[in-house]
Amino acid sequence: MSQENVELVRSLYEARDPSRWFDALDEEVELDLGPVPDSPVIRGKDAAIRWSRRWWGAWEGYTLEAAEVIDASDRVVVVHDERGRGRGSGVRLERRWAVIFTLRAGKVVRFRAFQGVNTREEALEAAELAE
Image (cartoon, rainbow, N blue to C red):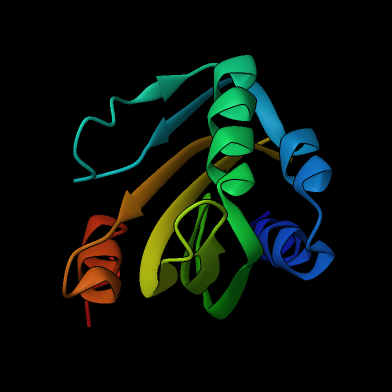
């Protein structure tokens, strides 16, 4: 199942279509956005979609590109690059961070973000793949 999980996650990034992401979410999905101020864990598909639409809607030219996709059995670690420009402010967003996708039966049941200085290493350690 791990290769199928990797292919599913990779296809989400390649599609560059928010609806593709939404289709991949389990009804009970949990989004843990990590150490983002005032960001609680978001539970449930509907709440995750609302949050995502607000986030993506705040940016012009928003892109999220997978730089590295790592197989971790029922989980997939992704190091990705996020870019955009604030719609109202014009502020540029450019950052690299990592996430762990946990999948079950072809659906994302958990999305855990790592947004610190050593995001790749933190994500690999959390996925028990530390080098």
